Length: 364
Ligand SMILES: *[C@@H]1O[C@H](CO)[C@@H](O)[C@H](O)[C@H]1NC(C)=O
Ligand SMILES: *[C@@H]1O[C@H](CO)[C@@H](O)[C@H](O)[C@H]1NC(C)=O
Image (cartoon, rainbow, N blue to C red; front, top):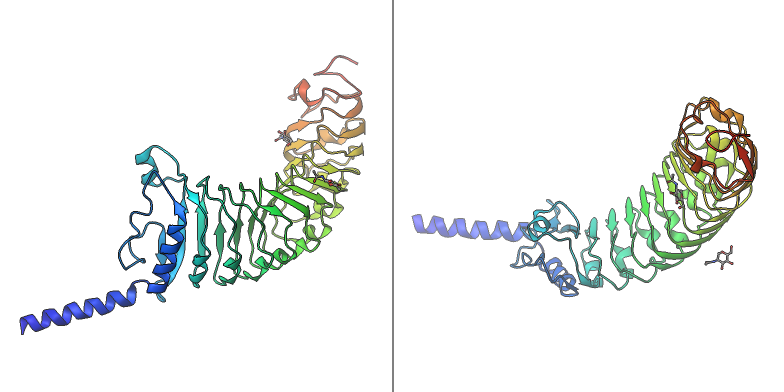
C-alpha cells in the first residue's frame, strides 16, 4: 500500500511539473536563440539545460498561469554577481534568431550591452503582440527598424540606442499608442521625423540624439502632454523651433544642440517648464528675447555657437534661477549686467562675441 502511494505521488508530481514547465515548443525556440549567440567568457547559457526552461534558466521567466516564456532578460552590464565574480562586463557575438518569434507570449525582450551582437532586428518581432519591452541597447545591431513596428500595441519601452541601425523612422512607429520611452540614440538613422510624431500620446522620454535625422521638428510633438525629456541633439535638423514647444506642460529637458536649426529663439521657451535648454551649435539668429521672468528657472541654458546678436537681455536678472549659462561664440554686443546670475558666471560664458564688455570680461 505504501509503495502504491509513492507511485501515485510520483505520478502526480510528474503531471504537475509537466504542467508548470515550459512547453517543448518554447524550449526549442530558446535553444535556437541560444545557438545563434556566442558568449565566450561567463557561461551565461550554462544553465539552459534540461526540459524545464521555466525554472533556473538564467534570464528566462515564464507566465505563472500560461507557463509560456514571458521574459528574456540578458544584460551584459549589471549588478549581477556573475559579472562581479568575473571582474568583467559581458561580451557576446552572433545574432538574434528569428526563432524567438515563436515565443508568442513574450512580453519582455532585453538583450542589452553585449557589445558584439550583430545582425538585424528580426522582422517577425512585430508579431509578438504581447511585447511590452524591447531593449537591445549597446550591441552592434544593423539594418532598419521593422516597417510595421506600429503593430506592437502594448509596447511601452523601445530602446535600441548605441547600435548601427540605419534607414528612416517608419511612419508606423507613431501608432505605438502605449509607448512611454523611446531611445534611438547613437545610431545611423536618417530621413525626417514622422510628421505625426505627436500621436505618441503616452511618450515621456524621446531620445534621438546622435543620428542623421534631417528636416524640421514636427509641430505635432508639442501635443504630447506627458513629454518631459526631448533630446534631438547631434542630428541634421533644420527649420525653426516650433513656438508651441514652449507651451508644453511638463517638458523639462530640451536638447536641440548640434543641428542646423535656424530662425529666432521662441519667447515662450524662456518662461516655460523647461529647466535644461541646450540650443548650442545651430544657426539661430536675431536677439535673445528680453522675456525672462520669475517663472524662468534654468539649471542649464546653453546658446553658444549660434548667430545671436544684440544685447544680453536685461530681464535675465529677474529669472528665478540661472545655473549654467553659455552665450559664447555669438555676435552679442553691449554691457554685461552686474546683478545675479552675472555675479557668478565666468568669462568663458561670454567669450567670442562681437563686443560684449564688463565683468568678467574687460571693462567697457
Ligand atoms: C542634411 O540635410 C540636408 C537637407 O536639409 C541634406 O541636403 C543633407 O544631405 C543632409 N546631410 C547629411 C549628412 O545627412
Ligand atoms: C550643449 O551641447 C553642446 C554640443 O553638443 C555640448 O558641447 C555642451 O556641453 C552642452 N552644454 C551643456 C551645458 O551640457
